[in-house]
Figure (tube, rainbow, N blue to C red):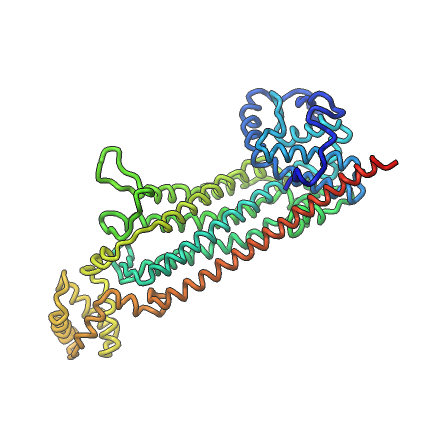
Length: 532
């Protein structure tokens, strides 16, 4: 995080002052004396730089401040030079916080980082303004900025998951007794509950969120100090830079530090799985809200209508969820292909192009989770439509077979065959008394054995709500079983939430340490300047 405005005294250098005088020409960079080709500039630099001013520059300011503090503390950079650099860092941070363009771009240039460095040179002169680049490269800076951005995105995604999990566990608990038809192969299967369904979806989402949660520790390591990928001969303190940026440690190998983006693959894979699960949920919700079922619905605020058909109420948000949630799948494939056959070193193809897909994927998935949370919060259910649907779908026939097994000692396959013939005989089930006689006759015909079925027990087996309540084993929809599942889900979500709070606290403490260290260096320069 950049140096906060309140952390330092006002800079001695205004944007128009400094030993550099006029803006440094963007055409003079290293061996290069000419600006980039106009078409090249328009295609590669112009639009990207505008985006980087918003998304990259805040992190670049943080990296810069931590690196300069470390150089000063190790004696590699005089404190007065470090203080001048940190004051400019502060001024740029103020402009970023105010939403201004902190690093103005000339007509043609070669990207944000060189513009950023040239801004220091413009204000402070080349000797001081360019001093911060000691023992570092754009390679380790870019790798570090990527990890900082991914770290922030992970925190955002996991925080949203915790909110979604809270809504889903509430919905599961609320609808524990909401008897609804379960389906297999899109055909009516057995009685279940809406609460049981929500709990099942959330278990899969939670497993994926836990994988993302573990990925945080992989991401949270600092590449700074690796320079171009071959280290440095300067005796730097990598651990201090890592600590000031809130990282838990450093990446040990310099080539690994700048060449690796494998963590993006792991994260995108988990994001893709999470997104796919959301699409499955959205598909079920849209199906069950259709006129064919009518189990679910939403208020007018969350549906649309047709431009031509007056009767339409379309749950269009569910289609947005599916459309956005699948973005990480495409990003995963693009990233994998972008890294394929790339040499194991820093490369624009890998570090910029292949890595760029994660940002769009993260935004799309975050939006999808927010929309999912919204539709679940505003969900309306029709218990009567759910029950009515179950009446003549034969979904309790498994329970009837189970009754023959438990009460009359039939083998399950024999019971299954008998009940199958019962279903073939009656498209619509007759009253219980008639059904009892028919089933007893079928058992006699099929198995050459007599049974006397208790009418009350048969009625109980035919009752969808009773069937759902009885399924308390094997993770079934029995209310007590679902409540136990909800408690487990809440516990797992709480663990993620607690780790998020702990990580935020660590990042806040690291930010404060960086602010305090930078302020100390600046104040020391002022004190020395005022000393007689």
